[in-house]
Every structure is written in structure tokens, then in C-alpha cells.
Image 1 (spheres, rainbow, N blue to C red):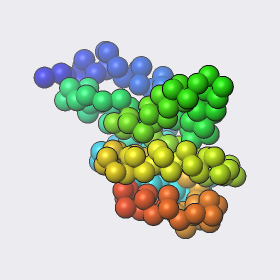
Image 2 (image 1 turned 90 degrees about the horizontal axis):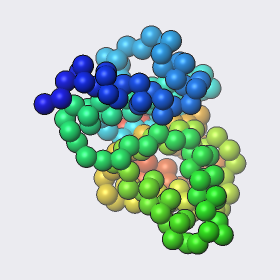
Image 3 (image 1 turned 60 degrees about the vertical axis):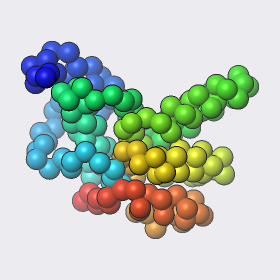
Image 4 (image 1 turned 30 degrees about the horizontal axis):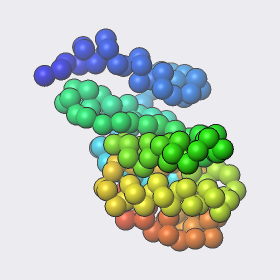
Length: 179
């Protein structure tokens, strides 16, 4: 059995370094009651700008990675801005459909995925299509997914002009409002 000391020595810092410099700073400086971090599971966290959604998701991700390490669980964990996911998929254009599918598969099949800031930009049909592929796969395979957004699910559906994605999220996630 792995220990807390091994976690600190081997992965604590590396996991925090997966976050953006701003989020790393907040993660280290803002005192967070870990008792208020929800249990391992799928969540849709929404609320106003500056309400702490991303920081909560980062603490959830950190705790999940720690659990993975301590319990020697397999799997790929990803924390990403939704816009960065789209950008990564777009960067494969013209390089062959196999490369695009490989990137898409990475997000579909990750054991634990945080999609930060979903709905932070105006949706294109292509973005909605990519989200449908990723979210539907994760929904069908019961994979753990955490979303953050400034929009509640009704607003997300309106922004997408499509209720299929919010409907899937409602069924797969616990909904948390940050104030």
C-alpha cells in the first residue's frame, strides 16, 4: 500500500504543475476546506465569475489523482479548458483523420476528465458536434467527468440551441451551484 508521504514526495507537486500558473498560485495560496471538496464522481459546477468553480474542480482533480496513486488505480486523468480541447482537435486538421481521432479519443476515454469553462465562448456547430461525441461517449461508458461553467444547464442549452448535451450532463452529473 502506498503512503501519504510517498504521494507528497512523488506526485503532489507534479499534479499541481498540471494546472495553469494562475491556478497553481490560487491552489497554493487560497486556503480551501478539503472537507467541502465533493467525493469522487461526476459534477456540473456552475456559478458567477470568480465564485471558485475552477479552484473547486482543481481540488477535486487533485483528490482524485491522490486516490488513484494511493489505491494504485489505473487510468488517465485530464484537466483542461474546454477551449483548449477544441484548439487541440483543430491543430490536427490537415494532418490526417487518424490524428484527429486519436486526440478526440484521448478526451472520450480518459478515466477522469475536467472540462473547465464549458460555454465560455459562443458555440459553433463544429464545437457542439465535438462536445456531443465526447460527452455522449463518457455518458454511455459511465466515465467520471467534471464540468465548470458560468451557465446553468438551461442557459447552456440555450447557448447551444440544443438540449441534448445538457440532458446528458443532467443524467451523468450531480449539479453544484457555487455562490
